[in-house]
Image (cartoon, rainbow, N blue to C red; front, side, top):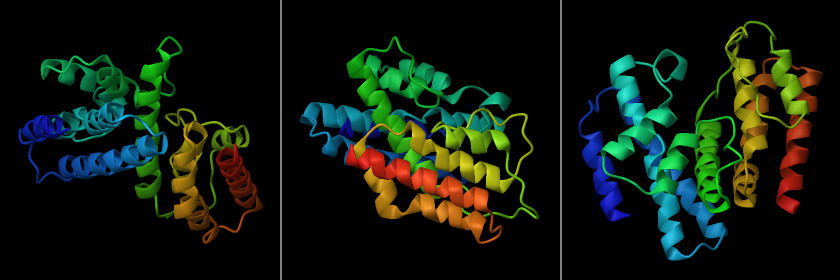
Length: 236
């Protein structure tokens, strides 16, 4: 892991650390590594696999530095797919471990492709869980909407225990995007991930951000659905 961290930090030095997006993604990555450690420990992985999981988490967002410095955005549709570009960057840096490459490539996709082998998928899912946990904790902790306006597709996705689908053509509201973050729970894979969600009470906190401003029965229903799902996954 020491050599991987040195390689990562050497690459990071090519970018302007004073840029908010660059430093933010570095900090995000370090938190994702910590979550990946927690998940890997819970799976009682052998030492080599534990270290591999940490490396996968370390490199997952490596393309974000280039994305922000060159395009000043984290919107893949306005720049490039940062999972695919990360794959290419790692190849250029001499990393040929297919598990690291694919966990980077697929961490931001809606789902890991079915043709990915079982072992590789484990590491892909550790990274995806760790990444989503940090996004859930950090993003969208404020609702500045002037009136209650939530995308119905987001509501239906949560009712169906699904991630929120593409919001590209849906009017932006804070409430809708809070739901998008919350719905990440439906793509979590490991019991430890759900335990972290429950221990931090983050889902209730997210819903309360909306409910403190808009006392809507619809939000209370979705909150109950999510909590029931979390409890079920922990008890499985």
